[in-house]
Image 1 (cartoon, rainbow, N blue to C red):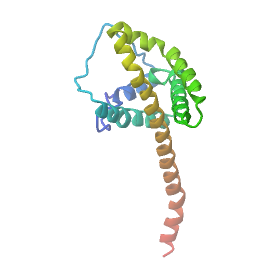
Image 2 (image 1 turned 30 degrees about the vertical axis):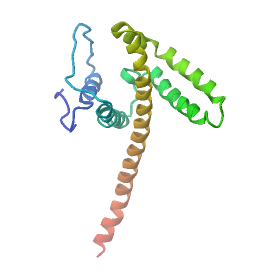
Image 3 (image 1 turned 120 degrees about the vertical axis):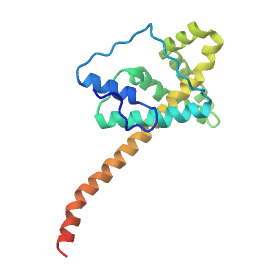
Image 4 (image 1 turned 60 degrees about the horizontal axis):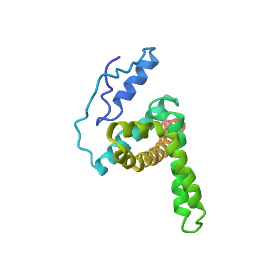
Length: 183
């Protein structure tokens, strides 16, 4: 299959892209649950957000749009998509709370929905590191939904701008070449 795509300037989604190529060729991808990998990185909030947003979320959006596929696996399942929408609803409710205090009730309902939808993730964190760690992961998880939604929106805009620029270049090129020939 040619290994990882070397066009990625930084480590980002080359593993995902390779997996998509393997699946397109009919290969099965199996998970070895006994294999553990540790990334030797020191994550701090800013470096984590920069890497997740610019080196993973945006390139992954671009890859999905180029391949014209919406998959229901990895971090793209329907629960995650719904959680992204709910996270933006939660933000709107919290922003509106100063003007309309009743939106706090909506924020509470949305928060409860997010907890229920993602309970398996939170249970995993609880089993691995305890209650306090699990509680600390929840705001980070919801932040993750927020920046994923933002990256997808920006990725859509970038993709459509690129397509419209290439459309105009393709449609205007014959006009300019005719103009140059007519000189």
